[in-house]
Length: 420
Image (cartoon, rainbow, N blue to C red; front, side, top):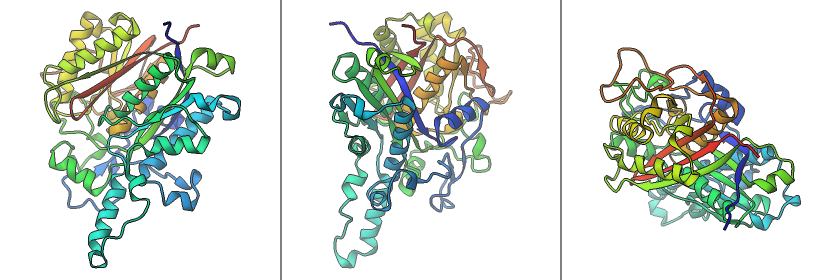
């Protein structure tokens, strides 16, 4: 069976550094941090009092008041990103076969705010007996964004959500890619959304000692590859990519950002929350992606790393890159855009896939911000081009984007310049 070719024809995003793709990308290139004090609840008693929040988001642009009561914040963000991606792709659903258009928009956690609010309301009014909002469950579950997007547009193709912690939306993209290249759909909206900047979200990650506690300087707290890094900065947002079968895209005259050519998946099989210190799963997932794309390591010019700014994760990923890419690792650019957006958990992979796609299209690599001389970690090889503090122009023939999640879930995708 000859596999179909799959291209990226639409992008949409709501991130801590911009409420659309254009703004997010420009701020990424400019090295803008999205971190600041938490405004969504009183965090004054928490070890971590800051995060990368989405700013000035108006869900009323996408929902009427009645609909809004049924949608958790993560779903609101997902719908906003999906609407931008659909418009960007120029899709007119009356002119395509809606039976062959699907949606896979995922979350690692889902409606944690809804869960928190409903349980708190129960205990606040416990004397009244068990009273819950009838929309509690559909607001909370982590697949509902996909369902809602399909309902808004009558899209009857494959529809589900993948849940693999911080690898969730990369798994979404890989699943969508596979569905199209196997001929089971013509178009897929793939991505992820997360809105876990909540009492239980921040409190839970604080209990794991996973979050940075640099409360005196939030904007510099996400500092991948620095010796002084002390944990990740939680982010929120959503991102969607329209993936399309090549001939279908050409037939309707769609613009093409890049071609998605490979996806890799693996497991660390090691620890509940920590990555393998030697990067075993990371090595395997990158090799699997290269094999899937039928590409030599020397063809990759940029890696958007998982790079969360944790003490264990950063050096293990660097070890894996050096082993997989050998001497070519020193010819590539490597950067962590989480230094600017924070870690969007289940939405991280889709945001970073968009940044990787735009790096390929525009031949520019966004930076890893917040590194200062004198803050070197002996476990990091600084002969690698980690793209510190300033974007770099270069030819980007192909980019690889890594995401790794709690539970040892690893996923990565490869996008390359489109050529007919």
